[in-house]
Length: 566
Image (cartoon, rainbow, N blue to C red):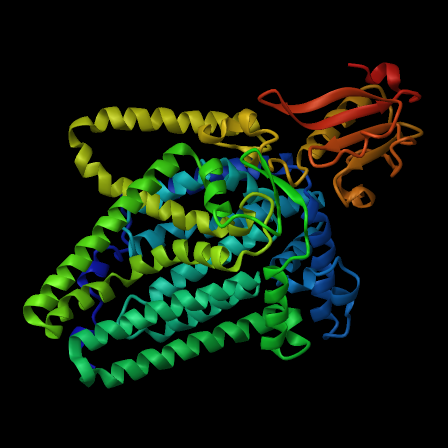
């Protein structure tokens, strides 16, 4: 292997110097502010539908290991089919919850946020390795001011750990691809990180495509530099690729009990097929139309991004697409001209350029490939775009790249542009503060804002607003001593979880499942359990922009009715 083939390409080396620079300071400052705000407010967020079953799943998955693989409650006594998800994050949460540092949901929200933020932190080194260092802080800012993403960081119990694992896997793959022949430490890291992604959700298998694509481009560089004399480099690249894939599957098998009770690849296939054909057939609102979850249009995911990503974010994505298309057209034209004038040998330089752009190409792949898979596969989807939440950080990287690319064209008006950008970011932050702790219902101006999107999209599909309504009611009743002796009864209508709400309660309640017998009934936006029950009087509502996300009712025969009246 020659020294030239082993040296990092010049184009890549420019963005891989990890000195303490302005972009690092800016990125760390953004992360620090987000960390302080997130830790201070984690207790404000409501319990959500899937957090109840994952709280049940975590301890039972942990018991599978602590019992020496004898306790099978993980497969028998949890809500089906949770075992098709890898439980590493749920087990981590169960361990920390067992310490009793705070109530179980505050601990869960804190850990979910910390893991999600750690995933976003990977955008800083990813940007330096691929699209340019200042794209990192820009991408972070875009992510943290996207209400749908920021709010989800606290209470989306599977998709946020998956987002983090995918970001770490992307970083590890790019580190592996820095050199023509990857170093073994980077290879091992790539195997571990991609294995973690697979062991979180079956969709993590797509990281194999990213890794193999990056290694093929490494091989292309070796061939462009040395031709058929590069056999040793090609063998080394192949060996490391196979090693990374083997480490990935070993990691996934160790972390995911479902893979341990049979042929791991057969078990994985069963889970993968299940999620490609989730047996959930219902109607969901999408741009004002009612669609069936099993018959969504191919445009569902892009159309949801069009409504949920901030307008500035979308604008930068358009610019990124234009830059990307222009670059692709230039490359194609230059390659064809070389082919016409000098024949096949003239393609050596274009192919070398393509190979040395592999890290940026992998980022583009991480944006395009999931959407192509969804369009081709047409799986059952619902709950906005939470199933593709992991793609948003990669979209933010491309948008950050577009921002950095366009800045030189704005030299004469940079001050004005900076002022407008600052005002725009302030407006986004004000919107997040107004929606708190329901930031994830934020919708952009194209969808009519949160108020205009109400009823036309799935907004509080997790039922998080019900917890805020509960806290209001608890404060009101505590002020009159309602919990001192005989506690009042409550029906908390979080879909499918009404009988499991005890961990959410901070006061002495009697849980009631019949709305006609409960003294108080709280409805989430996604539940109408009080609608058909007579004798209930509305006393309060949780609203954002004058749109209701939870309702509090009192039974008219209630002994507390006078004190409960608004």
